[in-house]
Image (cartoon, rainbow, N blue to C red):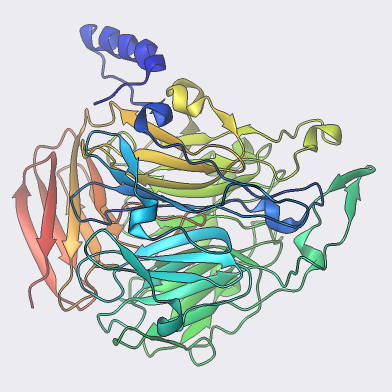
Length: 546
C-alpha cells in the first residue's frame, strides 16, 4: 500500500500507542498525489458572479469493471460567458488498480460528459450486473449504460431521461418494488445565463440569493423495464415546486417501501412518504422535518439517513448555510422527528461553516455511525465583508460517543482533515478493501482529495455486498440488520445521498470487539435471509434466492 510522505508522523504516533498498549486512533491521510488522481474541478468563472458557479461538483464511487475495487468518477463544470479555456473541460473516470493507485480511463470508457456538469449517481437500471451512471448538468442530463467491457454508451435519448433544466442531485431507487430501479432527479431554480442580476453586500459584489429566482419541479422517472423511463412526477403526487440540492431515499417509517427526502435552498424541505400504491404524500411539516426547531427555513444543501443511536429507526442529517446549524433530526419511531442539532453536539459547531456534502459512516468500526461534513463558502471575497467567514474551510468529522451525542475530532485525526479547501461533494467507500472506510471529497476549482483511513480497521468489521434477483440487481432498498452481543445495527443500501455524490453500495458494519455476528437481510421483494455466527473482517457477497 503506497504511503504519502507526510504520513510518517501519524505512523510513528500509532506505533507509540501500540507499544504502550493503547488502541491506535484512526487517521485520515491525504494520499491524493500518490494515488495518481489529478482531477481538478473548473467552474468557468469570469468575474460575472453567475449563481451556477457556486454549487461545485459531485463524485461517485463505483466498481464499473466489477473487479471488486471501487473506481472514482469525477464530474466537472465548463466554460461560462467571459471564459474560453484552451483545454476541454471533461468529467473523469479513474480505474482502481487494487493498490490504492488509480489510472485515468475516461477516453477509452467513453464517459467524458457533455455540458456543464453538476452531480452523478450510480445504479444498475437494466439489471445486467454492472453499474450505470447518471449525470446531472446545467442543461441536458446524461445516462451512460455500462456495456460490460470497460466502456459505456450514452443512451439518454433512447431512455428518455434527458432533463434539460438545472439539475443537482439524483438517485436511483425502486419506489414501486417491481425489481427495476427508477430515477429521481432534483432540480434547482429557473436560471438562465442571460438573466444574471448583479448583487452586492457592503458594496462588495456577491452571488445573488436563490430567493430572487423561481423554484422548479423535480422529476421522477419510472423504469419501464425495457431500457426506457416514463415521467410519472405528476401521477405520483410529487409535483411540488422547490429549490432542491440534496436527496436521500430511506424507509423512515419502517413500512417496507422507500420514502424520499429533498433538501431545498431557503425554503421548506420535502419529505415524500411512499403510500405503497405508486403515489407519495408530502409530510415534512406534519412529521417535523420541514424547518429547524425555530420553525425557520434553512439553506438545505446535503442530506443523508442513518441510525446513529442503533434504535432501529433511520435518523436524518441536513447541512446548511453559514450562521445556520447543520440539523440532526432524531427519528422517534412513531412517524415523527425531533430536531436535536444542538443537544447532540453538531449544531453549534457548524455555525461558522457553510456545509455541503454529508453522510453517516462508522469510521472507527466501534458500532456507532459518525458524521462527516464537507465545508466551503460560496463567496471568494467573504473576508472583505465578514469577520468570521472564510472562503476555504476545514471539513469536519464528528465522532459518535455512543450516548446520543457527537464530538468534533477533526483537528486530531490526520493530515487529510487539516486541509482547508472549498469543498462540496463527498463520498465514502473502502477503496483498498481493508475494512475501514476512506473518503473522497470534491472541491470547487481545486483538486479532488483522496483520504485514506489508517487504523479504522483495528476494531472488527463486516462488509456486505447484496445482489438482487427478484429485487433490483444492486439490491438498492435492501435493509440489513446485524446483531452482536453488544448491539443491533441497521443499514439500507441506497444510491445518491450526501450532496451530488455516490458512496459505496456495499453495507459496512463496525463490530467493535465482537467476534461473531448474526445477519438478517430483507430484500425489497420481501425475501429474507438469515446468517448466524458470521466471522468478522471479511467482505460477504450475498445473492438473493427466489
